[in-house]
Length: 80
Image (cartoon, rainbow, N blue to C red):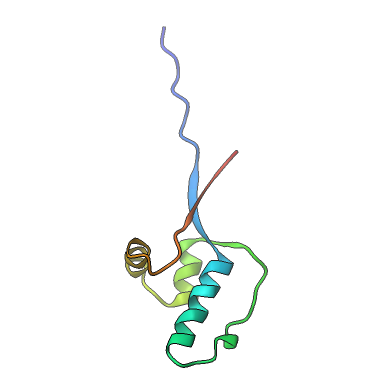
């Protein structure tokens, strides 16, 4: 008797907006700028496309900095 394999649970990765905003503010401050130029936003989760748009970094750069501990790690989101 053959049993059907259960399909994998869909997963996505995303970054908490508050962590990315904190990272951006630290970069502005390190360069001698005013970190308050980056506005607060309601807490949400940003997918990679949004993180690229907001930071101006390429996808590969984001993952390289995550691996080096220089950028927040993404969270894995999955259906319950």
